[in-house]
Image (cartoon, rainbow, N blue to C red; front, side, top):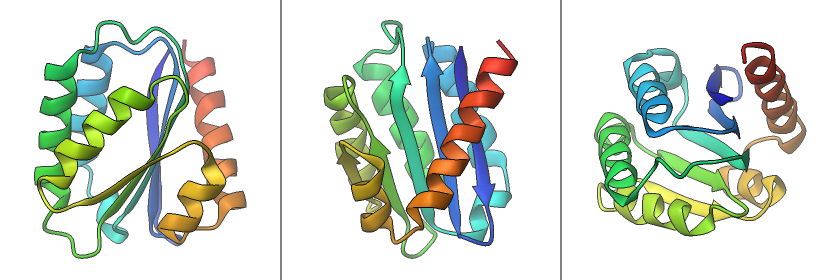
Amino acid sequence: MGVAFLTDADAGVTVTVWHGDVSASEWRAQVETLVQSRDWRSGPRFLSDIRTAGDVSSIDDHDINEMADRFAEAVSETPGTRVAVVAADLFDGARGFEVEVERHGVRTGVFGDVGDACAWLGVDQLAAEHSIDRLRRYIRSTS
């Protein structure tokens, strides 16, 4: 299905969702669109929910490192940047992303649920869950 993101400028958070099958090329395109966007600069917090991703077998360690480096280079100059990844079955790959992004000085955490991730980021959980649901619906509608 795919990857989508939105920025809530009022809350200062950008939410990304992976839903269904996600290829390396889809992820690469999403990261490039995100780093080119000026919207996320309104807030230094990022929440990525990858719990409902399906087949991600085309994404290997090289892709994880490449995307982590590209993303971290773009956001590392924004003071106080934090990235929370909510992962289930993809926990190991998310940890690889975490390690790579933190090499650039960007605080990153991997979590098992949205509540813990939101608490760590300091964002409203209900608003984040609303954004996650909205993005999942959008991905389903465009597939």
